[in-house]
Length: 303
Image (cartoon, rainbow, N blue to C red; front, side, top):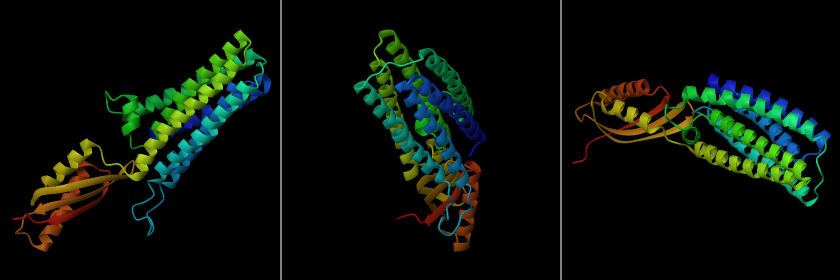
């Protein structure tokens, strides 16, 4: 796991833990549905950061007979579990709590306490989001939007933290608006509406995250730039006449598997072909260091 990802996860863990505790305390004093929904959301996010750390740790296990290509996909698996936790523990609970209070409204008490807690939470969550954005800038392609980064990144941790932090900040705004409107109008259903909005938001974010992690779990190819570099390195290797095809797949964020078929000089002996393949693999790894597993099938030109 990259150092930037670790920093972003650690910042999110610390912020969410502090926010969860303060929100639960606030709920006890106020009875706000929005605060309770946000407290459970922050608790789920705290657990999610732990799951991301767990995935990074398990991905470092050595290869073995049962897992000859390593355990890098553990990072994708645990990020997918994060999406499920965000959906169930965060989104569905917020929806349930909001609907219950909408059906049985009761006015929020100690609104000032709730406002102070939400304000502090917005600042702490802002610190976590700022850290995630800063670390993302280090690896994001210049000119690429954050949405494009989330859709194309092969590292699961930073997109996950980014989505969680954006959802958390937006959810806090919903909770704040519902709380204040409920107090001004003396209608507790505004607070319930804030909780429902938080639930819908978390379900949508969990769905987006789940779709992205599912794609990575199934197996995504290398970026177009990396595929071009690999193809060029193979095509320009000694004794390679033509590249018939090349397939790539990410086994992990920093681990690529490459399968290719190439036409070699027909005058080569078997030993010469073997040496040519070894040379081609060296050139390809030099072009794209993450290409750890390379399989090249020699072929001959068809008449």
